[in-house]
Image (tube, rainbow, N blue to C red):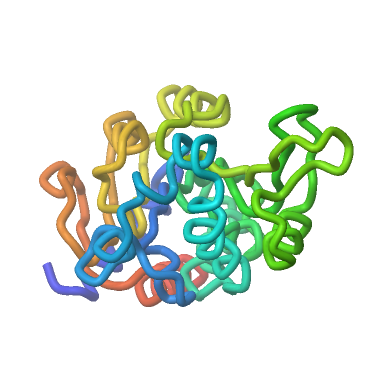
Length: 247
């Protein structure tokens, strides 16, 4: 099946579905200037996440966490949505997309206008105190770190602050299980965009769907089960699908 035929088939599957959902990964945001993790040249080839971005590092060596991992988080917040993010928001507005699960912490789906978003690995809009649990805007943590207050601390109780992201070693949030239950009960089509589908437990979600469309530059473990597999950038494919559905 050639590229044009793949786009048409994907659009028709979405048009025919009653409960289409989307799952996005790091490849969704590379066109917004955010490097992904696992592909050649990705962040994890340069930095060992277990040594810099884990809960264990945060609690036992917060200086390393805030000087390495957090600095990268702060850069991510400056990114803007790309055509792929905007297209998914449009699919929701048109009534085709019932919800979106993302592994990304960049918040770009929310910025693009998507309403039903499960950010199952957290986000960079806020942080909280490990002592009194008071919440603060993410920018408050950034200001402290940039001012050499490492780790950032709570003005109320002086305990350490941490960003609202799920780190290696953290349990999955209740939000993940909410998404799981909804997809298990309703999803007849899952649109996978920019995910390698190797990070668990999120990588188990495609097994809940009756049909799959996978848009990813690299192969995934679910390719052989998908109705359509498109090896192309999300920012190219998704606008083309929207255009066909709007026609």
